[in-house]
Image 1 (cartoon, rainbow, N blue to C red):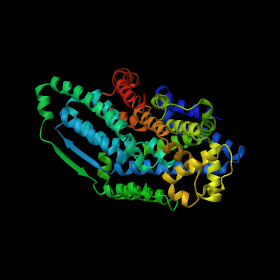
Image 2 (cartoon, rainbow, N blue to C red):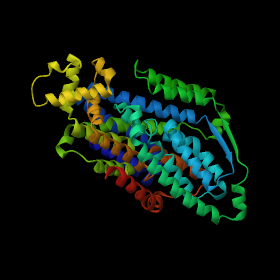
Image 3 (cartoon, one colour):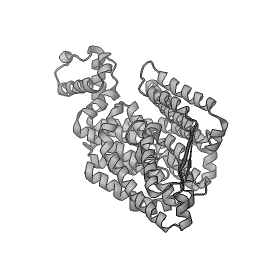
Image 4 (spheres, rainbow, N blue to C red):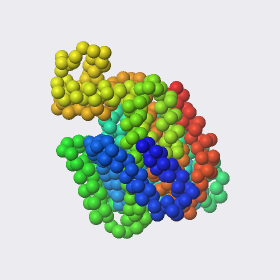
Length: 464
């Protein structure tokens, strides 16, 4: 039953390259077809309705966040002229990396790629497109759960919102900082080699203009909604309402200036229906069997999640490795037993029966008191929350979660298919007649000589 998941991810990776026209017309049918197989297995074969409902709720939260950020960012237009010197370009990308943690890599990419291309129009080269993908569309979004889809899925699984920035900022600063340094070197050389009239045009008077600023209010609503957990569906309702409000109140000329259309988000929504449905057997198997493979090490999780995120979408890759880690460090039967115990007896350890798992269960309850005190107080703890509490409460296990988070986010930049915004940026750049490298050229000229050494430095400093 893992086969539909593997086939769908393979189709996402290969079909746009080999059967582009056919795929653009039929990707929705393919995704929904594979989803139907997995849903039929769970609903009819296993009668596991609760499992499907939980997955459906995760998908709803995921797509509401991504979709609302996409729509709202499409109502904000930034005009910029001149001043695209190497120093200012570095500042632009650094600011873009920070914005990615607020708007998400998708929202930030859609908001900033057009002004970025316009600012550099006098000497636009491949490295301008590629480093925008590296920094704004991927690595820059590693600080918050809003920043990149894998981290938001982790948030839905129980990773506290502030845990990411507290524990991943050194890796983010190292990776993003090295990328900015390399970009400055390349851009400085390109700038100095440009003809005099081009350099004069580049350093002309800068003119900035922001249109659609009222959409920042709708953006604030979405960001505030992320922290709402009760009552159910209020978070998603606020996000959808903010997106509708943004779309209806944004002037048509702004949407036209941004070349806004719903096609990209429709494609993401349809593909992720299939991904969320078909990955259920893979995630369940990993969580149930991960303990057989021993305790995974941070290095293995960093390179493993990173390698798969390079050729598959990084969101399901993150969930797969997170499930493997939780299965290894907090077996499913233990999590279920603790959740059932809390439901019956609350946080009182006095009712724990003597046995080999007693101390482990007591430690798990203590971890819940640290990470999920409100849920523990209500005696409404889920097995996923038990596993997450165990993971976060142990420094070694938490380092493994760091490795999965950074590997999934950073390595999504390795290819066009590693993260959703990559292809969107490529399409817009080609539309603007920018020098955009092909798939193989992207990997050979930029990923291998630039990204791989930087990811190696991150591994040596933090996960070796």
